[in-house]
Length: 305
Image 1 (cartoon, rainbow, N blue to C red):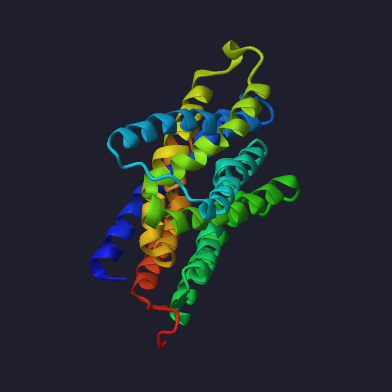
Image 2: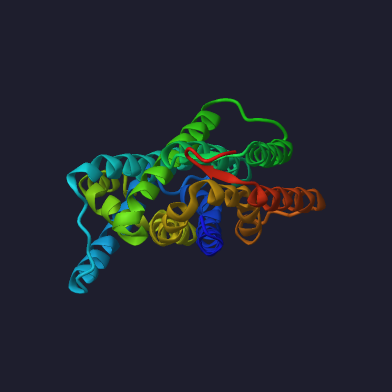
């Protein structure tokens, strides 16, 4: 990867991570806690994809009018299906199910695990060989974030919520890599649009099935959270994220290490949380780890270590 491409990848990755960082508190607002439930996690998951899918139709039609629309080939549809399973269903559904039972600060554990998962899958799919120093930084950064989240939560939550978070993390990584594989030919914007449009036969009826019986009983902040995850988390954020991953999946994956702390910062005005000194210390440590990892070599397949 050239220095110019690396800078571009990191810039797009930072934009995507910043948009995704608000997903946790916004999803928490949308579904509500167990003692004051709002929208169904199933409606939030499939409804946001349905809204983004309608927007994607308009975008693809505009691209067609500009003669820039690229239609997926038959060989690419399995990758589109894998991407849809990860980013349309797997990650958002299990994240929403978990956030009904645990706060967004605990849910941020999933974003702490995503960098390592994405790096491993990215290295396999793109035939890259990260150096030992890169892996050391990835493991150290993930360990720092996990340690902080466990400390903040007062210990790991046992039960279904943690299982949901692990499934969300795993499926999300597959979805990220599948989309990144498609981006070089289809383009970042058209990848997520095709994924969303092809998923409409599933997302629309499921969203309708789990829609609230009385829309008036749902609070305004819940609808705000839903609107955000539909527009930014499910659509615009992927424009930037897939473009970044296509330029350098292994490098960009480390930017995700700062996402939990950005989520906490966004949660302050939304959930009234307080960011204390310990949080700032951990945030600085993670940022230093990301910086060091950026300096570590990443080799192409067959290159000398």
